[in-house]
Image (cartoon, rainbow, N blue to C red; front, side):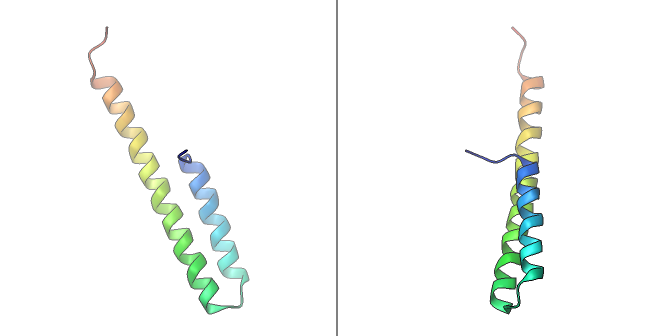
Length: 62
């Protein structure tokens, strides 16, 4: 199941917080990458929603 954009953004904030809280450079880099990935997934989910809305408007009405 795909997460909605808001959930991905919450995950990104959580990962950012974890990156700031850790003392390990390796863990910080990992959480920063996870946060970036979550932001990208949120943007992708927004795009998919916009395509769904476009297609719904574009399809002929019955």
